[in-house]
Length: 393
Image (cartoon, rainbow, N blue to C red; front, side):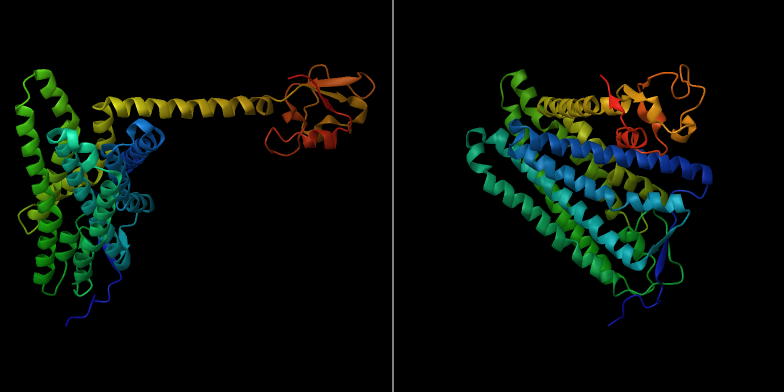
């Protein structure tokens, strides 16, 4: 039996998108913006589903799980790409590469299975509406969600473990922006037949089978929709699954296309662009697709954003007196001269030496501090100016 990683190489080199420094800066900004939009958009979907009782239904329960899988899917690859661009380094350790492959396959499989479960949910809702509540009960929904996660965790292991028994040549450059399993297999010097068999078996079981389930579900859905007599009824039925169908099309067309054509039939540049589609673009678009085409999600997001704005305004209103500061009446006789000792310019209008005026008024106590602490820390004023009393706000 072959020994794993026989070359002793500890690092791979991710070639990424380009070597041009100007283009790298452009890619860094673009990828960072896409990653932030992806994370924030999917987090808003999750918050909307959790906070709104109207969305505590099977469809939105699976949608929140899909959003969580999307965050994990993009977080597996994009932060490493951003770090490499920022540090001008293309290295990734062998252990990190293996970990990246595992979690990438895990979250990709979980998304496949969740899309299949969501298709089944739509099938039951449209084809068996009277039995929907009984069939899609909370216990079954929870089992489906946990089952998709468990199958993904176990399904990602075989393909990842086969890499450990391979030896690699001196060429350790991966023509990709992350450790893609087919790209890594091409660098091996030893026989990769077993690894390719495992790869295509995983693709069939965790990719083609779920896609077949989705197609069967939608064949029944379309058949039921066509039997609806009114055009309005057809439109309403189709609108409930249109967003899901669009997401499925984006994900499977790009993802399966790359992996089924990985053996020298697809150029690395085309594979790179296709990978960008299903690793970044699709997870980023999912929140927009579901929110723009779904009135319930739009209303829930509006309520979540309104609460966030209200909390922010309330916090700012409570901080306003501390930021602006009260009017302080300070006995001049209690101040140590010269005023510059307190960080006050001696040319302040109306300021005079002790005895010339009974008090000195300041609206902002910042002038009376010798340190750069938060303006609300007014104890320094009383420490340096005994007898100082706040006036009205």
